[in-house]
Image (tube, rainbow, N blue to C red):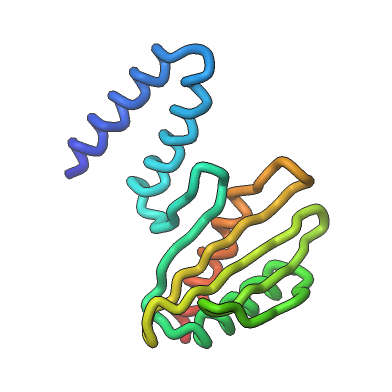
Length: 142
Protein backbone atom coordinates (compact mmCIF):
# COMPACT_ATOMS: atom_id res chain seq x y z
CA UNK A 1 0.00 0.00 0.00
CA UNK A 2 2.79 2.43 0.97
CA UNK A 3 4.64 1.57 -2.25
CA UNK A 4 1.53 2.33 -4.38
CA UNK A 5 1.08 5.68 -2.63
CA UNK A 6 4.72 6.55 -3.25
CA UNK A 7 4.44 5.65 -6.93
CA UNK A 8 1.27 7.72 -7.32
CA UNK A 9 2.96 10.66 -5.59
CA UNK A 10 6.01 10.47 -7.84
CA UNK A 11 3.88 10.09 -10.98
CA UNK A 12 1.77 13.10 -10.02
CA UNK A 13 4.95 15.12 -9.39
CA UNK A 14 6.36 14.14 -12.79
CA UNK A 15 3.15 15.13 -14.57
CA UNK A 16 3.01 18.38 -12.62
CA UNK A 17 6.55 19.31 -13.64
CA UNK A 18 5.72 18.77 -17.32
CA UNK A 19 2.61 20.95 -17.35
CA UNK A 20 2.65 24.58 -18.36
CA UNK A 21 0.18 27.38 -18.84
CA UNK A 22 -3.37 27.11 -17.53
CA UNK A 23 -3.24 23.41 -16.76
CA UNK A 24 -0.65 23.79 -13.98
CA UNK A 25 -2.89 25.60 -11.42
CA UNK A 26 -5.65 23.04 -11.97
CA UNK A 27 -3.18 20.20 -11.52
CA UNK A 28 -1.82 21.78 -8.36
CA UNK A 29 -5.34 21.98 -6.95
CA UNK A 30 -6.06 18.36 -7.81
CA UNK A 31 -2.66 17.33 -6.47
CA UNK A 32 -3.41 19.10 -3.17
CA UNK A 33 -6.79 17.40 -2.85
CA UNK A 34 -5.23 14.00 -3.43
CA UNK A 35 -2.37 14.66 -1.04
CA UNK A 36 -4.77 15.46 1.78
CA UNK A 37 -6.53 12.15 1.32
CA UNK A 38 -3.35 10.05 1.11
CA UNK A 39 -1.80 11.62 4.21
CA UNK A 40 -4.76 10.48 6.32
CA UNK A 41 -6.27 13.81 7.32
CA UNK A 42 -9.73 12.46 6.43
CA UNK A 43 -10.78 15.94 5.29
CA UNK A 44 -11.87 16.37 1.69
CA UNK A 45 -11.98 19.55 -0.38
CA UNK A 46 -13.91 21.02 -3.26
CA UNK A 47 -12.08 22.76 -6.09
CA UNK A 48 -12.85 26.16 -4.55
CA UNK A 49 -11.30 25.50 -1.12
CA UNK A 50 -14.27 24.28 0.88
CA UNK A 51 -13.40 21.58 3.42
CA UNK A 52 -15.83 18.86 4.41
CA UNK A 53 -16.03 15.64 6.39
CA UNK A 54 -18.66 13.23 7.63
CA UNK A 55 -18.75 12.21 11.30
CA UNK A 56 -20.50 9.25 12.87
CA UNK A 57 -22.22 11.47 15.42
CA UNK A 58 -25.62 13.12 15.67
CA UNK A 59 -26.16 16.66 14.45
CA UNK A 60 -26.54 18.04 18.02
CA UNK A 61 -23.24 16.39 19.05
CA UNK A 62 -21.39 17.81 16.04
CA UNK A 63 -22.95 21.24 16.58
CA UNK A 64 -21.81 21.34 20.23
CA UNK A 65 -18.32 20.16 19.26
CA UNK A 66 -18.08 22.70 16.42
CA UNK A 67 -19.16 25.61 18.65
CA UNK A 68 -16.62 24.54 21.28
CA UNK A 69 -13.90 24.23 18.62
CA UNK A 70 -14.63 27.74 17.36
CA UNK A 71 -14.53 29.04 20.93
CA UNK A 72 -11.24 27.21 21.63
CA UNK A 73 -9.79 28.75 18.46
CA UNK A 74 -10.77 32.26 19.61
CA UNK A 75 -13.34 32.75 16.88
CA UNK A 76 -16.26 35.07 17.50
CA UNK A 77 -19.43 33.04 17.01
CA UNK A 78 -22.16 34.92 15.19
CA UNK A 79 -25.47 33.62 13.93
CA UNK A 80 -26.56 30.01 14.28
CA UNK A 81 -29.67 29.12 12.36
CA UNK A 82 -31.68 26.11 11.31
CA UNK A 83 -31.63 25.12 7.65
CA UNK A 84 -33.66 22.58 5.69
CA UNK A 85 -30.85 20.05 6.08
CA UNK A 86 -29.46 20.92 9.51
CA UNK A 87 -27.69 24.00 10.87
CA UNK A 88 -25.68 26.95 9.60
CA UNK A 89 -23.08 28.63 11.80
CA UNK A 90 -21.30 31.90 11.09
CA UNK A 91 -18.20 33.04 12.93
CA UNK A 92 -15.27 35.34 12.39
CA UNK A 93 -11.62 35.63 13.22
CA UNK A 94 -9.46 38.72 12.95
CA UNK A 95 -9.57 38.76 9.15
CA UNK A 96 -11.60 35.68 8.25
CA UNK A 97 -15.31 35.08 7.77
CA UNK A 98 -16.20 31.51 8.70
CA UNK A 99 -19.24 29.68 7.33
CA UNK A 100 -20.12 26.20 8.56
CA UNK A 101 -22.94 23.99 7.39
CA UNK A 102 -23.97 20.91 9.34
CA UNK A 103 -26.10 18.44 7.42
CA UNK A 104 -27.82 15.47 9.07
CA UNK A 105 -27.22 12.43 6.90
CA UNK A 106 -28.99 10.15 9.38
CA UNK A 107 -29.81 10.28 13.08
CA UNK A 108 -26.22 9.18 13.82
CA UNK A 109 -24.27 10.71 10.92
CA UNK A 110 -23.53 14.38 10.21
CA UNK A 111 -21.60 16.07 7.42
CA UNK A 112 -19.69 19.26 8.24
CA UNK A 113 -18.75 21.72 5.51
CA UNK A 114 -16.50 24.67 6.35
CA UNK A 115 -15.24 27.64 4.43
CA UNK A 116 -12.96 30.36 5.76
CA UNK A 117 -13.10 33.45 3.56
CA UNK A 118 -10.22 35.88 3.50
CA UNK A 119 -11.49 38.95 1.73
CA UNK A 120 -13.69 38.68 -1.34
CA UNK A 121 -11.74 36.27 -3.51
CA UNK A 122 -9.55 34.11 -1.26
CA UNK A 123 -10.40 31.06 0.82
CA UNK A 124 -8.22 29.80 3.64
CA UNK A 125 -8.29 26.02 3.36
CA UNK A 126 -5.93 25.57 6.33
CA UNK A 127 -8.29 27.34 8.73
CA UNK A 128 -11.32 25.49 7.37
CA UNK A 129 -9.45 22.22 7.87
CA UNK A 130 -8.38 23.13 11.40
CA UNK A 131 -11.99 23.79 12.42
CA UNK A 132 -12.89 20.27 11.28
CA UNK A 133 -9.86 18.73 13.00
CA UNK A 134 -10.65 20.54 16.26
CA UNK A 135 -14.28 19.41 16.02
CA UNK A 136 -13.04 15.84 15.55
CA UNK A 137 -10.74 16.18 18.59
CA UNK A 138 -13.62 17.35 20.76
CA UNK A 139 -15.93 14.60 19.50
CA UNK A 140 -13.23 12.07 20.37
CA UNK A 141 -13.20 13.27 23.99
CA UNK A 142 -16.98 13.08 24.34
